[in-house]
Amino acid sequence: MALLSDFERIDNIITILFQTFGLKDNLDPENIERLRNKFERCRKDGSFSDFVWEIKNIFGLPMEFRLQYVYNKNFENLPELEKDFAIRNFHDRTGWAAQVMTPDFMPIFGDPNLGKCKLTIRIKKSLQYEKFETFFYCISHEMSHVLLRTVKPELWQNEEVTDLLTMFMGLSEIVREGRKSSRSKRRYGYLNEEIFSFAYRRIEEMQRENDSLLRKTITRIRKFLHL
Image 1 (cartoon, rainbow, N blue to C red):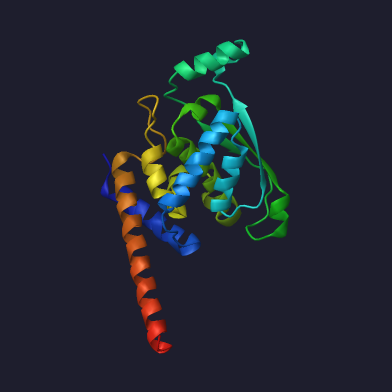
Image 2: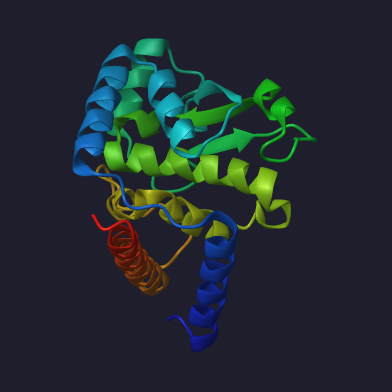
């Protein structure tokens, strides 16, 4: 059960993230449908490089990401066909789904040398059989780690901050749907249900406030210009 101090901590993190990164609107339905179609094509082809490229662009990250697909350790010594069959029928309820491997030194965000960095994302093979939102969320979480590493390095290994930043990037709906596995009873992420619901409502409220402020600003400009 979450305590008052937990909600206060999360609210403080939200304030820090807003001051540092701002807040994006949620992805529009047309864009989500486009990404869903790309995800399905990538799943059919057995390679998610193009889909991961789309996600890194959402985060504004210029570096190159190499994907490394990893089998559950229980299946490492099985023949290839048996591995795929086992993965399709095994519901992994524990452990990591994706990991990003970063170099010891990374330039800060905005440094031209950042584009020369090459990072590796390790992806469990079982993740490719999850639904679109879950795959999207898990990879986005790793991108949030990278963005924090280049902007707020003191927070980049904090999993709660990383989950919240993913939501700040306009992915609240993706996170909400992706947290629930389509293959098992597993829940992904580092925010419990109470904390997630609190953060979701808080971010939703902030997005409405941003939208209202934008409309008021546009109205004032139109009046000033006599439009």
